[in-house]
Image (cartoon, helix red, strand yellow):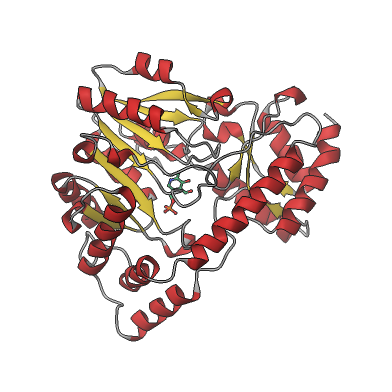
Length: 387
Ligand code: PLP
């Protein structure tokens, strides 16, 4: 069957491909340690699961409004207002099945063919994929290890142009675990406001911050009126499979994004949304406990990686990824990742899964038990020594 030419412009997220390959190896009897996919290994907290079961029993099994249930939009507006220190009204909130559709819908709604979109590289691959899909021009800004994987600000300022339509920022960051500091965010915000450019700020890893205070893009003067905030429940509440996320944006844009929901998913599952209210309004102790566990794992993984031959790894300040430098091995990161999967049974991703500037790096998700992380590091050692 012939598919439309636009499909050739749509990329993918390699984590799902590597996961499928790793699962196939497992079915063939191999023991694989999974460090490829970005999801907490914790169970969704009990009170959230109970809320979903109650919602199902009480009949929340029907279609709901496309932009989300009013009570969840209200809870999100309150939560974002408190955590970002800016006023948010429920009309500015659109609930979606996961945070990912907010990327897709924002880019579809804002970017015309030929418009330029600034995005981090290495960065979440879906940004670039969707920009290409709509005929936009992705403008990658390198994230450099020397600056803790912050934006290369000189390059950023050089690459701004009259065609820049959107700037995508993600902090704490996937895949590097880097966190943009206040000064960088401030400069990006000021440039966007001065030139009338929209910002998509992906703050899905907000809770996974191990040092320093979280700084939201939304807090800078003039940003609130021209920004789309992407956040969700997948990471913070270990709810990846539930599919629940949201965007906060100026009300007129929210109407367009809602129309994209009507044309695609119709609405987000009603009982899942009610569980989301329990997540936001209930006990936050499970989140704190999970983040504490991730901090210990980060230290275990980074310390361990720095003892491996040919590897050096800076200590990421956020998210749950380590991004070790493997340039000393002198081989493409895709080859190193492939050999670690087939020879060591350790599934992880080459840095190039996140863009060309990821060459020379690997990405490990440390959302796995300490025992598995230790075992993975030991299994990697002889394979890396053989390069
Ligand atoms: N943004 C970033 C940077 C991510 O890494 C992810 C998931 O991996 C998402 C957004 C979307 O998450 P979800 O659609 O599960 O809410």
